[in-house]
Amino acid sequence: MTRTLIHGGLVITASDEVHADVLIEDGRIAALAAPGILTADRTIDATGKYVIPGGVDAHTHMELPFGGTFASDTFETGTRAAAWGGTTTIIDFAVQSVGQALREGLDAWHAKAEGNCAIDYGFHMIVSDVNEDTLKEMDLLVEEGVTSFKQFMAYPGVFYSDDGQILRAMQRSADNGGLIMMHAENGIAIDVLVEQALARGETDPRYHGEVRKALLEAEATHRAIRLAQVAGAPLYVVHVSAMEAVAELARARDEGLPVFGETCPQYLFLSTDNLAEPDFEGAKYVCSTPLRPREHQAKLWQGLRTNDLQVVSTDHCPFCFTGQKDLGRGDFSKIPNGLPGVENRMDLLHQAVVDGHISRRRWIEIACATPARMFGLYPKKGTIAPGADADVVIYDPHAEQVLSAETHHMNVDYSAYEGRRVTGRVETVLSRGVPVVTEREYTGHAGHGVFTPRSTCQYLN
Image (cartoon, rainbow, N blue to C red; front, side, top):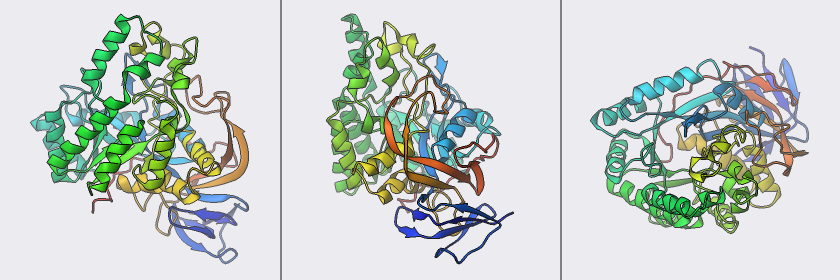
């Protein structure tokens, strides 16, 4: 293997900012040293740029079946787009269908991903059918590096688990070291409100946000926290969108409970104003939990600063506007739920640094280091340190770009951030030392990315 030296950049990790050269050997970081000391076969000039760890997006849904269709990004197109955006590891969700074993779902997702990914990947397991066999299988999955399990308090008849099923899975994870991830919305109550809204003729996309009330996210978050407390288990609440839900997490953490929260760029940068866009354009922004009124954004940023929210993932689950989102014309409940974003996360969060919401090190913490620690990948992923995988991004903090469907690489016909001007752009991306994006040109290939088994949550040891 050749030795590669990244020279002249500002190395930023969750804990440090230092002007240093980074030496890469055999796919790993071999050393950091003062500029000018180390030599190598190949040198990448990072003068005036940031040298940061590759992003870890702990929440994606490639090829997810939903509402009679499939997410429009495959593992090939989705991981390529992730690489373009400076993300070098994704953790996707394998799905257990009701009546199936966990193993069947996991095997199906391995088959979709294997040989198709441009970057490394892991899996969480969606648990849709809690029974004795499922509980036993959870132990086996933890042993082979699938150490987190997602449950849904939403979507009755699809992914939904009742409180008893949730409690049993949490008790099992308390024993086997797994982490329960919760979609916290009161789906039973929401279904009543959906039915009532449609009966009143309220069919436009904006009603999707109005029926999925913030209080029903907060209520479910509270219930999930207390069930986890009863089970003696840790809890990770996904895609937190409402200030009332943040308050529940903050309260639990103040009590010393092992409770964690994730939010997503769409909740930080978009709002119900987008859902209300005319001519069915609002359908582009239908996701669950839904976008909230703008005043929720300040509380989410505050939660990220105070560490009541620890991670920003994308919940990348794209559906094309034409042919997929329009399944819900005349009935908002039939609009496939999900937004594209895997390519935009690192840039949007850098914009948050520029705007003064977070520091540079916090940017790396919430986008790289903490998701790696939360899901058992650190320090292999999420940092730049000797021994870590050489997942490295050369980032130009001064370049300006306009986000647009015209220029993005996600396999979807619109951008949720169309026309938004941001400062900062990925220039070069290495995955295990191999260049996948080289000076704004794609040099990666499907099959480079490998399945990465994970240890258990590193905040619990």
